[in-house]
Every structure is written in C-alpha cells, then in structure tokens.
Image (tube, rainbow, N blue to C red):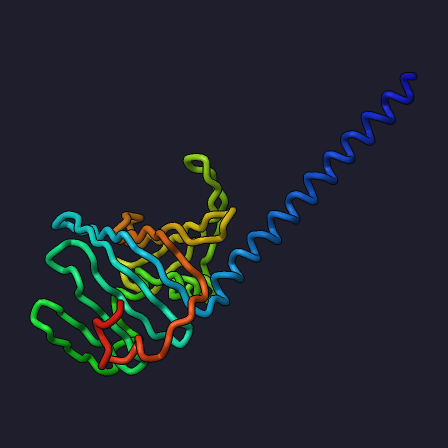
Length: 216
C-alpha cells in the first residue's frame, strides 16, 4: 500500500510538472500570436484618449485614428471642443492639416515620415521600434481583473522620448495603451485606445487631400 501511495505521488507530481510545462508553452505561443497579429496588421482604426504632460501642465485630447499599412494615416481631433474637426492627414507624400473653422488646409510636403506625433500615437510605429530595437523587453501582469502583455522598447527620440511601453489585452490581443517616457522614466505622453479594429478596408480616396474632412 505504501509503495502504491509513493508511486501515485510521483505520477501526480510529474503530471503537474508536465501540465505547467504545457501551460508555459501555450502562453508563449499565445504571446507570439498576439505580437504577430499586431505586427502583420494591414490597417487599424480606433479612438485615442491622449494625455500630453510637460512642465507647463497636462493637456488632454480625444482623437480618431486611421492607419493603413502603406503608411497613410488620418488623425481627427474630437476634444477639446475648440479643436473639434481638426484633421492631420498623411497621403504618402506629405502632411495635410485641415481646420474646419476656417475651411482651410495646409500642406507640409515631405515631412510625413518624420511627423513628431506619429511614433507617440501609432501602435504600428511602436512595433517597428520593438522589433528593431536592441533593448526590447516584455512581461505579463494582471490589473483590475484583466491580463496584459506589456512590451517595452527604447526609441531614438532624445532625452524627452527615451522609451515606450505598449499594453495589450492578453485575452483579446487588442492594444490598450501606449506610453512614452523621458530618460528619467517620467510619462510624458499616453494614448489609451478604445474601439480598436484590425484590418478594416479603407478606400484610397479617404487618404486624398482633395477629400480631407469629408466622410470621416
């Protein structure tokens, strides 16, 4: 009887270890799938609640974001009210800025790829830095009943834009928040996402400067 109990105990422990190993493997596969889903997305749209922090205080914005894999994007401000309807559009060649209050648009040819706000808002830009960065880390945490995969990466933005952290919901694989830090580890920019949708189909005309402000 004693030998049987010892044998049963050994089998129980081994099965537990095997189960833990399988669970770790399943978790690793899931995390890779989440990262692949974001890295290989063709497009996305979402609402972003933006907080910009400086020595002058804190500013908050609500924006609509559209991005496509060819690099074209639209940022439409909804709040504060004074900026409602303002649009920044990159058509693949340069940035267009539209102000609905005066019905005017301004072109900044050739600066779309270097637009300072882009890397702080777009998940796609973060993933480029994450995959190419020499100091990229990840961890998994529970917060308020949700499980998050958190990716970290250094960015080449000087002392004010030193690194970024992307929060991804581990169950849905949807990006939740993108934070930007200075070299003293202070958050200087935060974008919280909602209504995040992968791989929507956008017609080419939505990214044409002639149509800026129409239908979005």
